[in-house]
Image 1 (cartoon, helix red, strand yellow):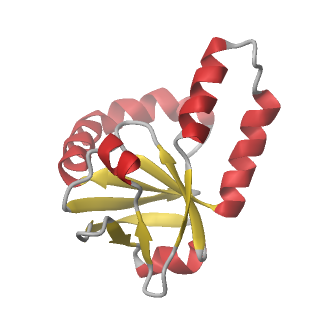
Image 2 (cartoon, rainbow, N blue to C red):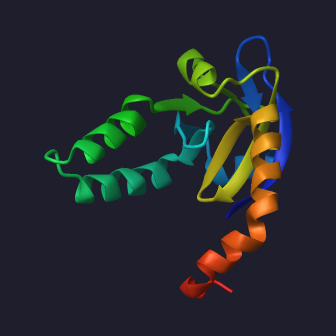
Amino acid sequence: MLIGEYTHTIDDKNRVSLPSKFRSLMGKKIVITPGLDQCLFAFTVKEWEKIAGKLSENASMLSTDMRSFTRYMFGGASEVEVDNIGRVLVPDFLRERANLKTKVVLIGVQNRVEIWNEKSWTDYKRQVEKQADGLAEKLSGLGIM
């Protein structure tokens, strides 16, 4: 399981180092795709194949929402290599989409890594922390805890 929060720097060639704890779990090739809430998602190839399968199973070309969402996820996806020292090249169009500058935050979220602009993550986290009790209450019926 991917967990934790790590701040890293994007170098002048648009490469970011994966945290060492993530490297061993993710392998030598990953898929980076547009995420939600202004971040990027990074998946192992195996996890990406699972997600692609689920989207394909439930996808109806007749549904405007499904067509739009699958175009967003698949059209913006990029398979990238993890180099020998654990860096990945973030494609320009994805870096720009998530407004990634010099400092980025990598968040482990179970089956994916999220890559955030440092300020966007700080703002988002602050907002969610204020709502955490209310969110827990809303989700309490799911039997999570």
